[in-house]
Length: 199
Image 1 (cartoon, rainbow, N blue to C red):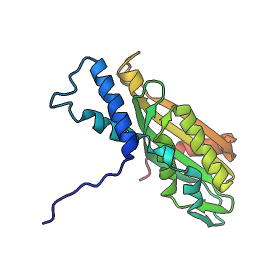
Image 2 (image 1 turned 135 degrees about the vertical axis):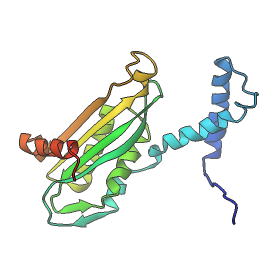
Image 3 (image 1 turned 90 degrees about the vertical axis):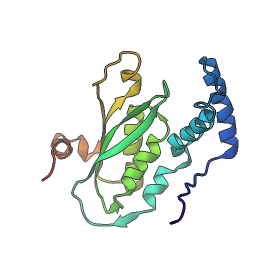
């Protein structure tokens, strides 16, 4: 049986700079960065933060354009319950939840896996939920030029739950619509589809 070897690649220069900065932060918080439990923490955090913000190195528009297909289908396409993990840019604490995305094609469809990929590409940055919602919508609109796009995100924010107001059960919902989804009937159909569990 072969040994398991985990291979990770990080920017060495960025890791060194971030590690030194986190070492200083930990020391300024009153901890002993040389003790066993914290000795490798600055490097671990440096690598973790690079992963959590790797969306800066991705081009969401090109992700979508890499898998466009000509298709006459003009009914609503919905991808719901997409896991979202992001970092609040105000306190650098996580927010997480689910995104629901729909569009109505206008001659072009996109590979279904690309929609969660662009959600992740935008989410893995310093963010606010409102901007994230709009960025996903605008990217799909630009790449596909569909008859309409709808995005709803439901998320819990650690900056509200761990600090500040400390409301552990609060959920923030944001939405953004274009085209056909600005019509009440179409928007209601979308909301119904993401609200109900299909048997």
